[in-house]
Length: 470
Image (cartoon, rainbow, N blue to C red; front, top):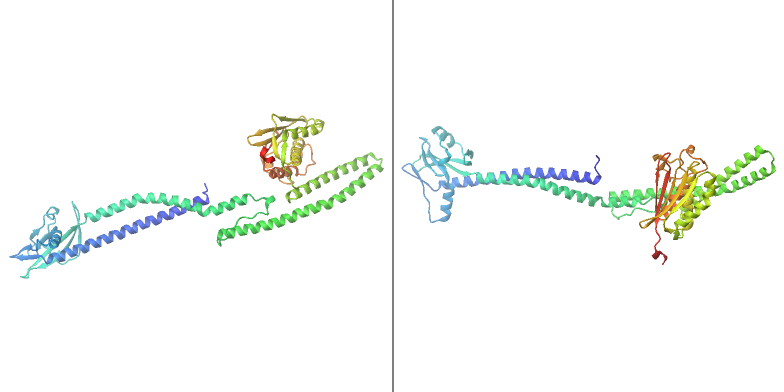
C-alpha cells in the first residue's frame, strides 16, 4: 500500500522525532548519572577531609571531638560518621566502627588494610542494603602512628533517582511519540494545504476553461514556482487550442462554399443524365456531400460553443412536453426502422435552462439511441423529478458499449466499431455537443451500458424554482 504524501511526511517526522527523543533520553540519562556521581564523590571527599579535623587519638584509641552545641559541626560530624571505621595500620585491628557500618560486614584483613592505605580512590561496594561508596585515607596521630580511615556514603538515593528518571523516560517516550505523530500529521496537513487548494483549483480547469489560472500567494517559494510553471503551461495550452479552434472554424467555413458548389454541379448533372447507374452514383455523392455538410455544421457549432460565442437564455423548460414533442416528431423515423419509440412521464418536470439547446440535447441522445438500436428494438425516454433536480433517462435495447468505449463516449470525433451500428453517418460529435450543453446547464450526464444489452444515458439538470422568475 502506497502512503499519501501527508502520511509519508507524518511518518518520517514521527520517526525522526522518535530517534531524537531516544537519543536525548540516553544522553540526558548519562549526563545526569555523571553529575550525580560527581556530586556524591565531591561530598564524600569533603566529609573525609573534614572528619580528619575532628579525630583525636588518646592512648591509641580514636575519638571524634566536636562542639555539640554547634549545630553545623554536629550535623557535619553526624553525616561523616554515619558510615565510617578506623583500622590500625600495623596490626590490622578494627578500632572504631559506626553502628550503620557494622551490619554491612566490611571487615578487612591486615593485608587489605596495607593495600588500602596506598589507594585514595573512591570504591563502590555492593551490600545487602544497597551500594556504598567508600573513600580510604591515612590518618597520623601526634605520636606518628598511622591509621586507616574509611568514610562512606550510601548510593541508594542516587540509584533511586536514576531509576525513577529512567522509568519516567520509558513512560513518556511512547506518549511523546504519539503526540509527535499527531503534531506531525497536523503540521504536514497545514504545510500541504496550499497544495491541496491548488489541486482543487486545477480540477476545475478543463478544455473549456483554459483561461483560468491557479491562484498565486505572492511568496517566493517552491510551491509558488510550481504554480507559475503550471499557469505558464495553461497559457501555452490556451494559445495552442485557440489556434486549433480558429483553424477548424476557418477550415469549416472554407469548405462550405466549395461543397455547396460541388453539390449544385452534381445536381445539374443528375438532372441532365438518363443513365440509371450514373444517377445512383450521383445521388450517392450528394448524400456524401450532405453528410460532410452536416459534419461541418457540427464542427462550427462546437467551435462557437467552446469559444463562448453562443449565449444561452435560461428559463423554465417543461422537459416532459419537450420530450413528448420530439418523440412525436421522430416516431415516423423510428417506425421506418421498426423501432418502438416511447416517452414516459409521470409528473410535470420543469428544468431551468435554454429550451433550444435542451431540445438539441434530447434530439442528439434520441438520434444516437436509434442509430445504435437494430430493427425490433426499443427506445424509451423517461422524464421524472429526482429530489431537487430534473432527470431524463434515454434508454435503448441496442448494441451497447464496452467499458473502454464508455470511457471515451463524450470525446470529440471518437467512434466505436462502425460494424456495431446500423448507421455509419456519425462523426463522433453528437455526444460531445451533449456534454457541452449539460455542462453549460450545470448538470451531469452518465452512461450505463453493456455490450448487447443496450445503453442508458442519464441527464440531471437543475429544477426550475419560482424565485428564478424574479
